[in-house]
Amino acid sequence: MINNLPQFSQTIWQRIFEIFLRFADAFYRVSVRLLYHSKIVGVLLVSSLIIFVTSISFFISVFNEVQTKDEIIQNSRQGFYAIDVGQGDSLLYVTKENQTILTDTGRPGSGIVQKLEKILGKYRKKIDVVVLTHPDSDHVGEIENILATYEVGLILYSPIYDVRPDSLKSIENIRSKNHGLTLPVFAGENLNLSSKEKIYFLSPAFTGMATFANKKELEEDNYFSVVSLIKSKDLIFMMADAPQKIEKVLASLATRSTFSNSASASPQRFETADIFSQLSNLTGEEFQRNQFDKIILKVGHHGSKTSSASEFIKQLSPTDAILSYGKNNRYGHPHKEVLDLLMGGFLASSSPASSMSSVSLSPVPQIKIHRTIFGTVYFGE
Image (cartoon, rainbow, N blue to C red; front, side, top):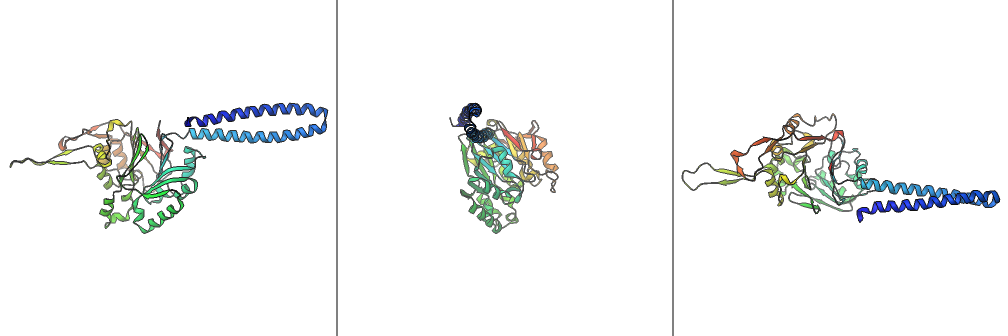
């Protein structure tokens, strides 16, 4: 019933407007006739008519506004949007229950608010969840404009904000402007978006932060990028600027050593599992390739060669890859090495367990590559 409210509202306004027009037309005809018999009565009626015409104009504007509002709400389609923000990232997911989760906001001046209005409609002023993957300005440069325009229910941010003094000041400023909750997010946490839609956070791990604490990686926000995946009818990976080191951790095969008790034992043998088994281990939920219509990869770091580890890409073997970068950017993104890898299109053996020696790569149809420089990329129904 709720989904039919806009259409029902529009029908009521149409009927009211039609009745009002008929009344105004009858009033006009009576006024014209009386004008011939009495000038005073005629002037009064004409004055009243002017008031009614003004009222009609008001009703017309209200009707058009309601109709436009309904159309915009109806055009807010469920699905995944990689928004064109130039050299930066901004990803939006709209659930079947019309909830919204925005991952990053693009660089300063990217116009994300106007672009969101085109997707969600100018009347919608709430975003349920905002994820800030790391403090780089090309990812979070428009967060203040988002907070000035939208009511945000929950902000999840990379814990690197709480470690580095410059970022700590930034997140405190964001927290003061957000009326909802503002919390760090770690690997292993998840959110139920609907009965069949869920978002999992795969990185950064708390133990990983301790590992990097005394190393130069602590100075690089990319190592603490929030990596997440959305599980719906599709499986959507959002890699932010995570470098190859993080991707290799996600792609690392679960191993089990097997030894013989005899003196003449053969060299140890490893049992391996594919990346979907690894995801099942990381999330605690079952993942199988054939349960998804598409495997969508938002390629890491705008197609930089510092991301997109071959082990990760080949094991995941996405059906679709999205590259978000600015035209003629000074970094040369996307790099040729990444494009060559994506266009190679190889699929790792997806058997639940096989010996290391039997793991093979078999050719599959070429991965479809989508680029935000041609406009917002949309996956949905």
